[in-house]
Amino acid sequence: MRKTDEERNLLEKLASGILDGMVGEEKIYKGYSDVSYGKYIKDGIPISYKEGESSRFFNGKENERIKGKKTTESYDTDELKLSFLQKYGWLMDDEDVKAYSAKFKPIK
Image 1 (cartoon, one colour):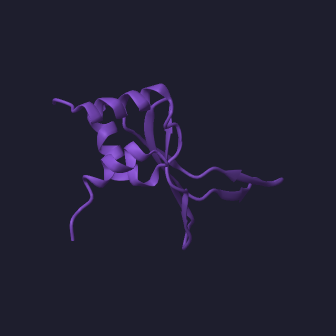
Image 2: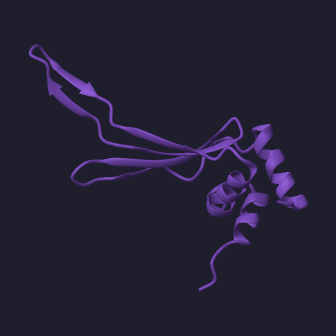
């Protein structure tokens, strides 16, 4: 797949670590069990995660806490990185990324 100059520039920004950090805010959905969702960029690789609620049980002496199941999805290829920026770039503080993401916003 051929990349435009804009896409190469965004991939360079990702690789340099300028865009590292949380993307948007972590969301916690409460109900029968609490589930948290989030997205972040670490070392130039976008990652999205979902973490279930922790649980407790009594082992005969004391309560023990078990962490909830956590699943992560890593966007490690150039095509996946660009698709992440297209979909979630509007949540970031970089103007170039916001402009790139706006090009892929669905028209109503």
